[in-house]
Image (cartoon, rainbow, N blue to C red; front, side, top):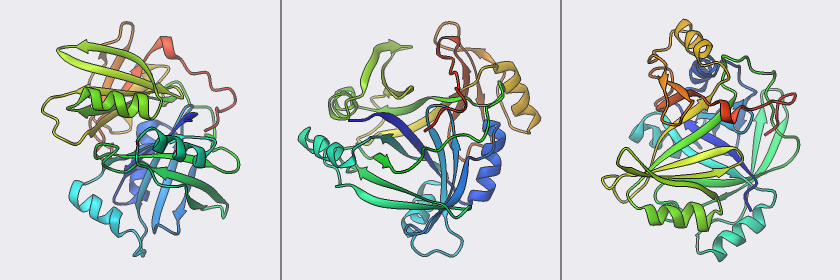
Length: 287
């Protein structure tokens, strides 16, 4: 049903400024700039080896982006949505409903690039109640896949490693991500006194941390990017003016990490080096 991890969406107040910040953070320019005419939003896409990072903000003069403006007014900039990929949106929607998950029929969408090229897609949105308050969707794309404009340097982000979600209900998470969406449960273990569930799809891990105090709704809690040279990535981030912690050992053996504290548009951000999950970009792996 789900074939890839498609993208994370980060809601921002102003796309031009946010795009510049993420070019510094990720170490590569955006792969696409444009707008969503029907939604009244502007966007920038950064294509990594296994996923896309989408920045989306209200269009300068659009009135259609009322919902996004209200979201930003209430919460500020931050991680807004996760999107998985499918080859058949209609079948995906039907399968989700068969599994007891409320989801919309496929809805057509269109993005107009700054180059004048139109990219079309269909989306299936899970109901907020089914997704425990999060924005989760599935995307079927038409036409050529988006790819990075060039091979990333070792100091640049090569891949999206994981997305962190906090929940108060482990069984609900297992039902949603495992039995509902069909993601592979790669690991279920206790780390530093907290139960953690690791679901994987398309080379990306959905890391669910069970927190009894998280409340009735789940919450996005950050992202992590992989690089091939952590020390060079740290030096590049500091030289770009970002506030970053000193490199340290990660929880997983043989990994090293550092935290970026500024320029993330409200998204808690980790950079890591994991030799066991090196990504070979074969001429820029497509998304």
